[in-house]
Length: 246
Image (tube, rainbow, N blue to C red):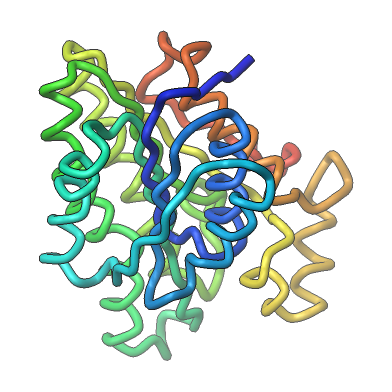
């Protein structure tokens, strides 16, 4: 089930948290994974994959470097012959109430969370269109669906990913490419641990399943959407949120 043997996958933001869990899960299912992150940060994920008998390589890229990001899918195809799966996951927060939010914090979040996805998806589409097959998955957030005070920039970027992905899904469906979104809720990661304890308690109280999600919960959803079992699903937002938003 959810077999990915023979597939080549690119995962951004793969150094930690959700991205790393997705990279590791893809490799367990048989994919060759290109784990992308800034500097040498993705090497730990590659080492963990190798320790489990999987195949992966690290790619050093800053997703706000448009030229480097545009070149990455082509470089993967030149080296490995194809690109079957793209997970655009890299993201940041710069939280502040809107009245106090600095323009540079708005721009940084939009550039990393939304504009980088545009750059990367556009570049990845080229080989996928030639192959007449592919899986594109963007990682949004429950905040992009329901909003959250102090996160106007983050909510805008993640809501934008949903609209972006739905539009692209319509553009490329006839070429055998699916485009879907995962919208995680409150997941136990470094990012959520940085939220105040009171905020974590308040958010957790809104989760019907009564717990924070794990990165493995999100990775399982990504693996499904990347697999043949999800071949008839496109333009969909898969909520992994414990019922926090329905």
